[in-house]
Length: 446
Image 1 (cartoon, rainbow, N blue to C red):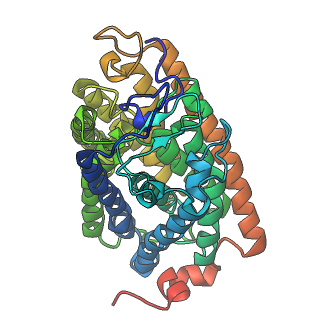
Image 2: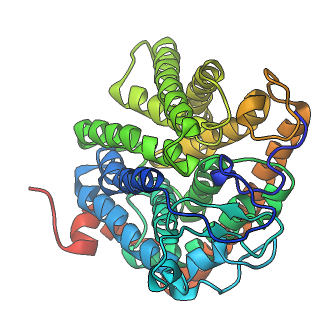
């Protein structure tokens, strides 16, 4: 495969780049309706999806604290995104970071104030502007839901031991210093990662590798939970976890199919590949666990489904159904190995396998996108029909994975240390033994 996307933001790869713009494009009501639905579906993934998924896997004394983490992160990340995050990620700036042109969403409602039924052009001042067919307000909100779920996923790695005040401070700083820059690199028309031709359809690097690696760093910095390996850490209610995983599965169609930017053929293909890969991930984890421990567990099957969802995310709009199944199968096996075998051997406490599933699955998906990207789907200038992947594209994907990991590790570590030195990261030993529900929130499940 020759050159892919040429600095066009991967999320809007299906849309036509405009070499010269005489006027902003008109709003397409069908595209707008689909993006509104997709936005609601992605929000559903965090509240209540991630909340229930994680709450079902912790002990009873920490269920409410785990649920409220997702709600609190949703609120905090929404405000950060509105004030400064969107501008840093999608504002006109440099290849490394956006400017403050959209601070407090300045200018987002211009088409309304002018009384014109016009959409907007992302990166209008860049060399490769991208015409959207939806109002910018819808795009802001759609991207906000991604900014919400990413820090919510991190919480799975430090479950049952971080102070609530530390969580709030970490979310603010991490959203600004880690999430926004990487989103700009990958998804902005100006971003340097997009410029080298690396692609990420819906968040393999920006969301999953980013959150998984940050979670691993947090788990290492905070240390293990008290009594791990000596006390009963059985999940409180796997019914919650199954419901949460099911909500994630359904919401993921908004995550992936919505990333086509409208109601179009690419959205349909992204939905199909998402379903196939998810089923493959669930079955692969189930079989691997069956062979390894002689019993396929409910937690294992839903974890495999999430692994398939994660891995197909960067590839969903670029691959066909056959490769999507392969991506899901590979992710199911690799994520099982990372969570059930590698983690115990290395001895770190990634409480709910945020790194084992999201970090590992994101890496698998991002790399395999380079292997299986299908020419006619990849919006290239010179790809004959039937061309699948290339070594050059694999290298570009590996570069994107590498820089995401390096930036995330460095700045996540710095943020955690700053928070620890100022307000402290972890509850005390006695507080952890009593449970975060009562200690942090004064409530408990009867």
